[in-house]
Length: 79
Image 1 (spheres, rainbow, N blue to C red):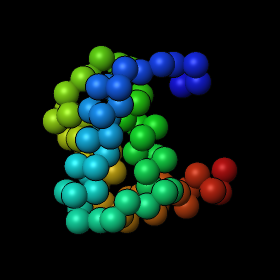
Image 2: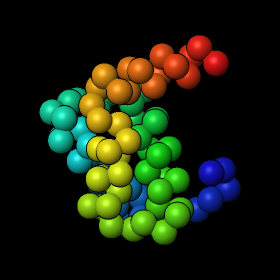
Image 3: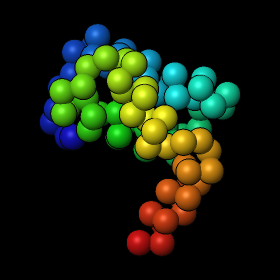
């Protein structure tokens, strides 16, 4: 991801998808979650998915709420 440059409109789109994930689950933004969500949305965007709806749906399917985020952060700490 380093060295990649995005247009401002692309950044707004990806940010919108992350914000929509938080709204979907009624959560306030949390730095640990945001790091994972942003990484995932950038990967998906780089695969050619460029609608906020698709990116949001991907995040919701991959991280289906705060418990899945906690499981993910716990499992990555163990490695």
